[in-house]
Length: 154
Image (cartoon, rainbow, N blue to C red; front, side, top):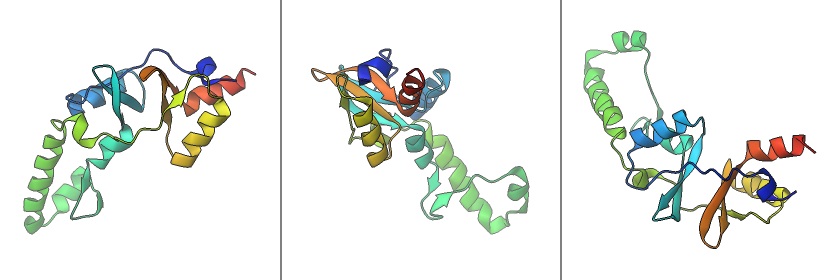
């Protein structure tokens, strides 16, 4: 079975100058977890939910912290200044440009490649999707789910 047999030819994509807010909305509306980033038809990156979540990591804390309403009430006064900075950071995240946070090192595959090759690439590089390329153009996208669905039809 080849990639062209399981890929989705209707590629939903972002542009480098889209905001994180726009990218998140695009992913949600299309019920997808990532999308290629195209500039003038050329692949320049990939944006995923993981990339978006990484923006929420608080550097000085070393991890993601989104407090519940109860935790906010319990936060000592001296921590409120830090919380204000965190709120500002979270509101600024939405205006970040996709090009600033997208994954630029993109693994791709040909539509003529086997699904086994696509699967191996995904597992080896711990990725969930591969843009499908022909003549330096994105002609589709293949995800882990596409491959599993294709195998289920055998």
